[in-house]
Length: 141
Image (tube, rainbow, N blue to C red; front, side, top):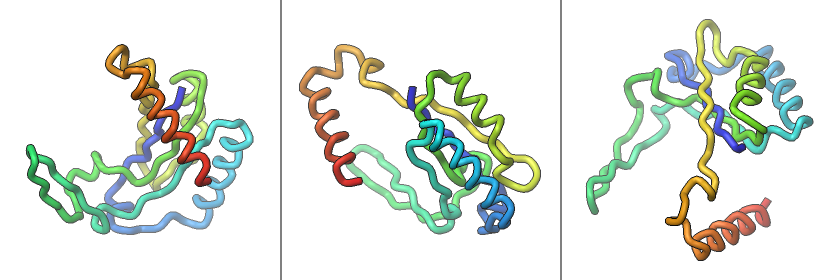
């Protein structure tokens, strides 16, 4: 099972407050454990939403909305992509994670869709296309 592990933003992360040396070292050690266990596929921190943009879709119309965005609790400060056996395994890894922010913080775990989840709508032609794209992405690494 692949999952995205989402570090939620805080007022401090949205204000651009950088993590301490100690937190960076602790997260580096945790990431090393994830890599050694074969769990971590990718991961990074994100700049505050003030440096980002959103594109809103309404039919054929596209509207660009510049950050910052409100509702800090709905924003993302960082992420990992993990390969785990189950949601329970992902939860156990998150419990071992250093607190990503000073004070209270939250990490969300969301399973990724796999080809089988789409049923008959995901035709053999679409599956082949997906596999070809994944191979092209892997080749660029």
